[in-house]
Length: 251
Image 1 (cartoon, rainbow, N blue to C red):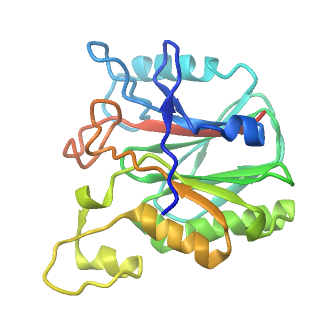
Image 2 (cartoon, helix red, strand yellow):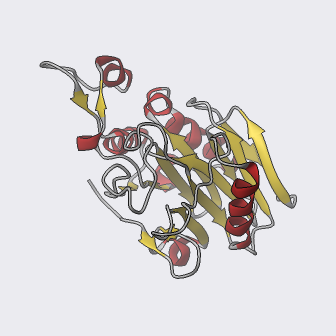
Image 3 (cartoon, rainbow, N blue to C red):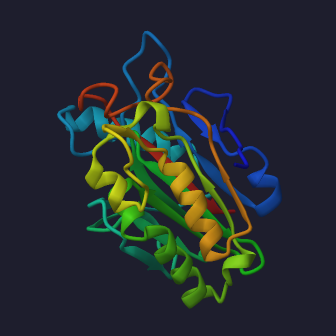
């Protein structure tokens, strides 16, 4: 499995980047972290119990860190495979309903998904200057959100799978993700022996990418469950943790 691990960026906000992607592809690509010990967690969840004013204050700080991106797009995620195409970069923060992926060719639009164990999947078509960002939990992975993101880039930008570059980002690792038979069968993995079983969603996504025809697809080895000092983990916290935001945009 080809791997690339995210690295922290210097500065006041807990931002992590995909190393080399900015220089290679002219993008910003990365994920937020938990933040500095001793300070309130940098929780960007919008549907939790935190006070609205605190959440919005953190969002304003996050978006202000990307002054070259006047447009930002997020959706209420439903663990499905709907990927939206965005044709323009009208300024402002857009919050949509019922989607788990975004794709665009528009410079200046920051694509966003929230995660806290699920996998953020980054896709780039370098020649066509098109991108997609996907939220892939086990349900989205099982219902083909990666294939849908690839289809969107082919349909709207004319990008063939073999031209794409992809990455499965910071997420819970297989040894820490204990699941039942319905999850294993949902993603097409065998359930021999007595459960429960352990599932590495990133390895499933890498196999899907290979089957689709994506030749350059890497995965992070960073585990949210084991790295709760730096990232949020829904499972590691018993459902009480906050949310990180993965981001991808064309510069």
